[in-house]
Structure formats: structure tokens, C-alpha cells
Image (cartoon, rainbow, N blue to C red; front, side, top):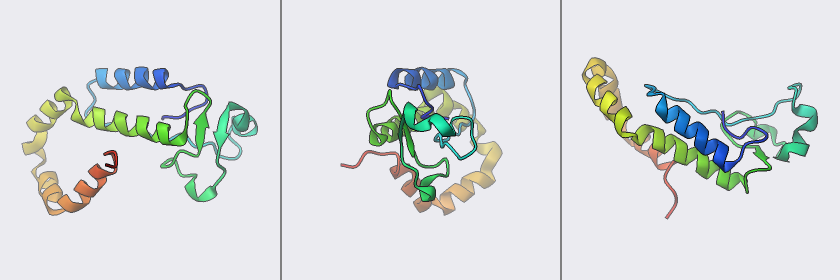
Length: 128
């Protein structure tokens, strides 16, 4: 989970380094979302900026930005950098190539749905 109260760019970098060091096969990084009734709910506005837009409160959008991060845009950038870094890691790609034949049905699925995968990949690329 990324974007918790108290996080800074440095702590996010350390977490990213740690995740890469684990040699995981896959990774899913949720975006912290404070929900009503959660222990942090009553004090969340003291911990950073909070956009209480219910349409965005789904762990897929940053609605909270901790004080240690400059902006929601910067938090999104850090998130995208981490995801891209994980899946472009040399060791991860090496393991992926070794497993690709074991998962030929998944490869066929990827090839059939390549435009959608390409579109998702572009979500993690900076606009030019």
C-alpha cells in the first residue's frame, strides 16, 4: 500500500527497494484510501490533504496525500515509477521468460488482447 500517513518520498523509495529485493513473481500495490470508521478517519485531515470524493475512494485513486509528499500528482508519479520499475527489473523479466512456456494459454490471451495491454502500459508512461 502506498500513500499512508507519515510516508515520504524516501520511505516510498525504501519500500520499493525492499519489494524489488524480495524477488517476487508478481506485485500489487494498492493506493491508500481512508474509509469512514477506520481508526485514522477522525484524524486523517491532520495527516495530510484529503479529497473526500466518494467516487474516487476505491484504492485505485489517491484521495489522501501525506504531508511528506508534495502533491497527488507527485504521489501518482512515484506509484507509476514503482510499478514500472518492478516489471522492468532484469531479474523479474528473466524469471518471466523462463515461465512463459509453462503459461502458453496466458501468452495466447496476451497476444489476443495486446491493444488493451498496451493501453494499460501507457497509463504508466509520462505524457509527452
